[in-house]
Length: 196
Length: 390
Image (cartoon, rainbow over all chains, first blue to last red; front, side, top):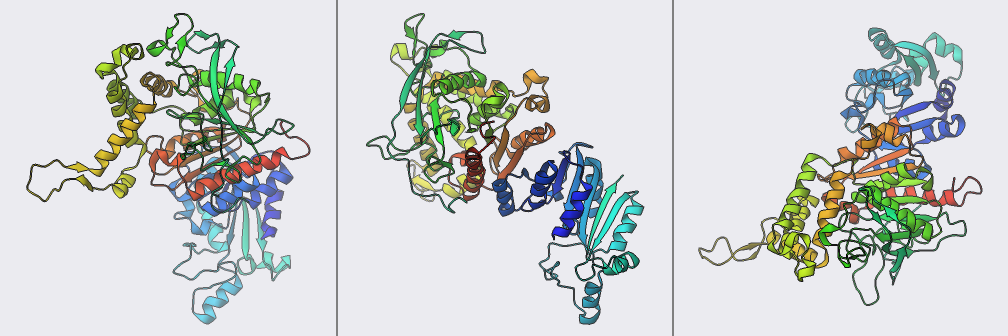
């Protein structure tokens, strides 16, 4: 999990404004505050997570992302981050548009459904994958959109989104060659740095 | 971490004190109170750095008795659930100051006090007040107590307005502001309810143009009616339905008889109205509801809340309750949005509750946790070796 944090750290300019959509317990914002002295705000709806943010001094705003982000002005943040939550949004493509409206840049991480283990799970077991990263049954999962690295790249092209950087994380294949040859097969978590 | 449920611990027996502030208080309306009295209570101990002070700001009908019990009294102060040892506003860690503000009627200078210029009761002639006047007077109490900077200023409703005003008027005199169920300005609907309440009071023949005390009268019926109207707006439809429904206290709707019938809600509201009118002053009610109406955080900042909050230096916690329609969550969200735009540290929590506006006074696990977590961090900051009190 911390691997994507490290990558995000590299892409954040110190002392800038960062909005974290679905910030959870505030771990990312806290580390960015400590290391990069950012001014961060997280949006979250889970009461427990909100309380953890408050307890550790992370600014948290109780707001449901699915109800829109119209209260945020255009370009009001340097970077808008969303880690492991795009697949749980009702309309991910519109969320992406909103992120790029509010932020100059945005950073997205998501689980790649094209990862070979997920493919193998579906292929050989014939059932929807339940993995460490996607640890839900099909009926109770908050992850309502399953997409792959390749799907996301296509979406970026279609919507004229500029990919500044991309990083692939795979715990079983630290070998970067495999990942760069077949990213869709060997990326477990995709990390994207985007702009308009 | 805070204990998972409120303790039954109480600060115990408390007594109030009165201070005569000798410094002239220049009011927003231009008039000057040469001296004024403030009644207040304190809970907990002021630390040696005098850095652990928390100011509680009361709302429309509040007073200085926020926590603990008076000797021989079985009813605790109005915020006892939240103020005490081990409670969210932890008196083991903080020195909590709770006062009755001027213009109110629980011992501090107000319409029921003597006007030194005339030797008569102020009554309706008491000068009109703004939230900033309360802040000025609180600042004088702060100096009297030898506190240079509040760890936190906290209040619900009108209390939240004072906390926000503090952050703009004396940005370097508080480290945190906790703004609960409040608003940067009232809506037309909210002002409308206040005017209905004032009209109810003024329509009582015993109001005597506000000089009822000199005639040994009091507009009890008018004030009770005002309170009944207010009370309905402080509750939610859902809660009233649950609590009272259509239950009858007297009579029977099935019986074909001409006997009197009374719904539980009628009896409850009448009781609340009467209880209130026995303890509150009608002129104070008029004065303070107007104060609410006149409050507009950003009026002097070009009506721009972001420009207003740009002056603040403290951190903020903003809270609202889902069923509060008098100070709706949207109003609090506007505060949080303006603070974010102004680049201030702010957290916003919207608490699920069916208790309407009154929720800010009532037990609620999430509310307690959020407030407790926030303030325990504030307390930790006070013990930090460097940078405290900055």
